[in-house]
Image (cartoon, rainbow, N blue to C red):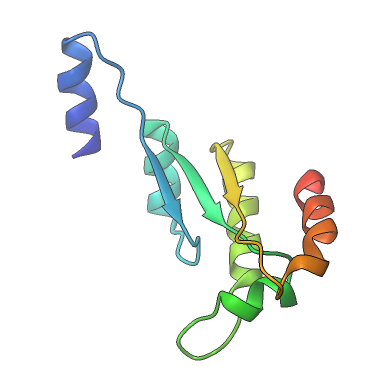
Length: 107
C-alpha cells in the first residue's frame, strides 16, 4: 500500500513520507529492505539500557527485550534507515538515564 500511495500522490505533486513507532522487537530482512526502498523512518521506544529497559519492556515470557532492540537499532543504523528514540521516564529508570544518553551518543 505505501508504494502505491506514494506513486499516486507523487503524480499529484505530493511527497508522502512514512514513519512507524515500534518497540522494535521484530525486524526482518524484508522489513529492512522495504523500509530502505521506501525511505521509511522509525521511532523506537527505549527506556534505558539493559536492566532499566527490561523492567518495563518485556515479552510475554517475562524476558527483557533490550538485547533484541539493541541489535535491531544497530541494523537500522547499518542500513542508514532513519531512527529516533522515545523514553518513558519513571522512578524505575531515572538513575539509568545518563547511561542511556551515553549509549545513544555512542550509537
